[in-house]
Image (tube, rainbow, N blue to C red; front, side, top):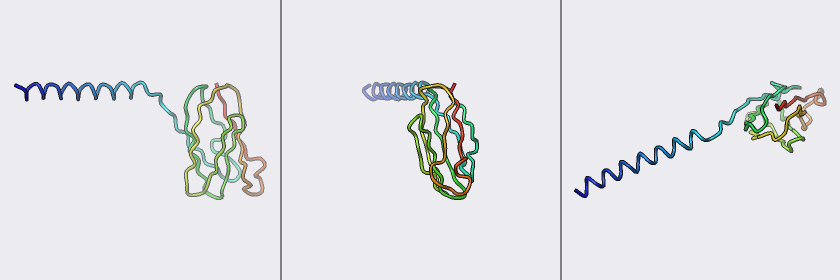
Length: 120
């Protein structure tokens, strides 16, 4: 009799645990990943569109030389090193069009290397 109750209790506990995990998974906001390549002398894509309050992860690669990513309006920056992925997490809290740029000298043409974050 005790074994029967113990099995019922364990089955109930397992079912409750699975339901809890499912509820957390459903309630968790989705984070969008955007891949960005920093190459001489351009970001690809150079226009990134997101929504206000949307959590995004920018994953940067640089195939040629070290680059930088600087988004001063959101106080965000990263070093982008060839052979590695630089990750930037961002949840914009304001709307508008914001300029980002390369802030590590990457050769002739560096001064025009910029893009736009468009937040709607």
